[in-house]
Amino acid sequence: MLDLINGLSELQIYLLAGGLILQGMLVAVFPEEVIVITMGLLWAQGKVHFLPTLLVIQVCLMPADFWMAFLGNKVGGRLLKRKGVEEALEYVRRYGAWVIFLTRFTPTIRGAVYLAYGISGLSLKKFFKTDYLASCIHIPLLLLIGKHIGETSSSITDAYKKVGITAGAILGTAIVAIIIHERRRRRRLTSGSRPSGS
Image (cartoon, rainbow, N blue to C red; front, side, top):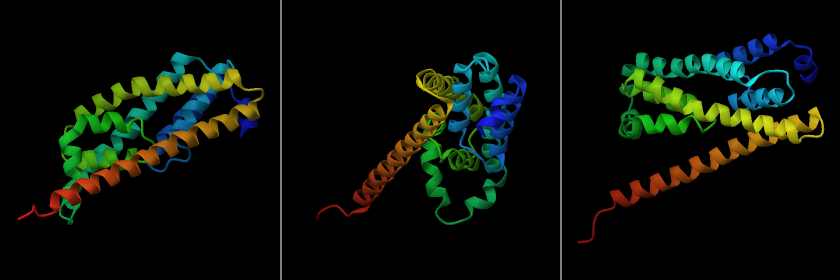
């Protein structure tokens, strides 16, 4: 993998990164955090430049994200007939834009949340605007993390180890946050469903 990237031109690196991100519309080969942090690492090495990298990532990321919300919007009617789906969407409907904004910073659950947003019937235009605004913070932040890794690593192998550790830490933090949130939500539901004392 390292030899492959080292042998590519700047344009080829942009095309590879863009293709991997667009592939997320179907099945993500690599989490986008790994792709973006790696691009930051390549930026530190002078193989790519910040503005074209940011442009390529956002141009490819926005359609991939929008696709899930669009798909949910189109198949939502059928899914809403299933028991329990309506209750699960209530949270998305209540907090709409905030859910999308915060989901941009939460790996592993993005696709499911974007699909739920589409199913909920909320505005796809609002989805796009919110996701784009969040990406204007998220993507540069990941690029800067990757650049920092590249500048503080003793070798390319060391740098890629740090990319893996950083992506794993982001994923682990997201999983812990989701578990804590879900437990709190269940406690609220349980305490809310208990009959009051007579």
